[in-house]
Image 1 (cartoon, rainbow, N blue to C red):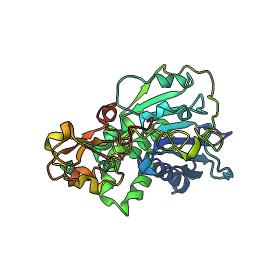
Image 2: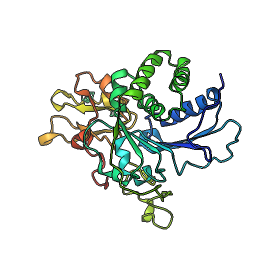
Image 3: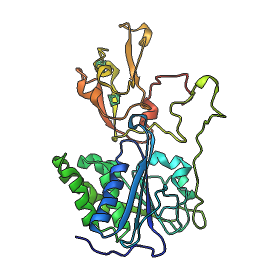
Image 4: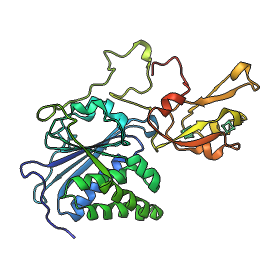
Length: 332
Ligand code: SF4
Ligand code: SF4
């Protein structure tokens, strides 16, 4: 059913930018939103993403641009001055590019547990509406993904995004390949639409934020000699510290028999081997996990014969505390 809806502004497109890390579902969220808007809300829309490898935890940006049905959208540039920014992981608040171009009358949604308000949010315009939702926590409880929760929260902030229409598109996305996920996603979406928290008085900036175009840390003029990369990843910004699922494997050394089965199944070679404590009983012993490379797939846990690896919810700082470095000589 097509029907005309009223966009928030008549003189420009509505633009949303999903800020994420590979694996959290930002691309799919943008796709669902744009598809529903075009097919079921009578709007014109465009969607595309920029991203790298999921297992490297690369920065992912997904862009959605919506306009009236009678107005073609001829631009396909990234969204630089968003009406809505949706942040899939609180670690991304450390990247100034997350805030770039934020409009003063926009909505800034970020995924984080209740608690201290990050100091970085002071960079936002004073008049922006800031919304926090524990998307990862809800997703874990509902056996869903953060993208379903965040879509629900986004719809709650913009009445023209009819929540039932967007939810129907989300369900349709999964009905074919993963019908078992439909009910989980629906619950996650509905909780996202209601279980958010508006945070007052955090932004300090006046007016719209300036547009920023990120520069790579290294280019052909600044690249260290010999092609050496002293930090993993060569993106403009690349924080690999966050799990992509909300779960982390935790090693309990007293139960480990150093059989190496976990290492056989790990797709990203995150498990760190060494000489063991006090010389070790074995030639090589499992020392721990380098979470910088771990995407939280939990295959290692499923395959461990002794229960030496357990699944723990990713809480702030846990990965930093437990991390064993695979390459201690690297700077990050
Ligand atoms: S599979 Fe389990 S017991 Fe074997 S090395 Fe890995 S953690 Fe240790
Ligand atoms: S969860 Fe386990 S198997 Fe998966 S990437 Fe992390 S260490 Fe490797």
